[in-house]
Image (cartoon, rainbow, N blue to C red; front, side):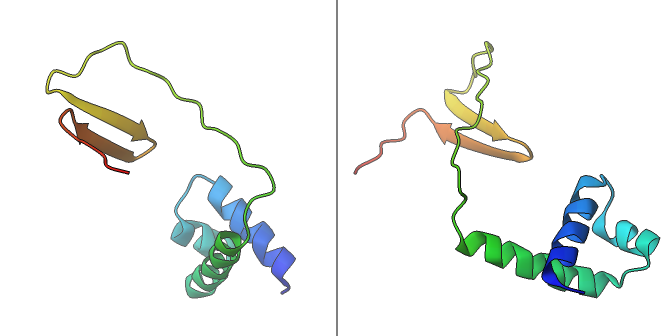
Length: 89
């Protein structure tokens, strides 16, 4: 199987909405092989910068934080910064 076929399968798995393990079982693909392909593809994508950079949309909540902190929530990640943070450049 060539790299283009592996990239297509990894993209299909990621778009499926189910776990990689369940997807592999449904497709008759060895899970360990899939992990190897996905890891290699991820490494190649990290090494080559994207052709187009774009800004992410930001939605600002009208609710004020009561603890004096600022939270940035992006998908499953949350970054909390206390109001006293001072950055030195």
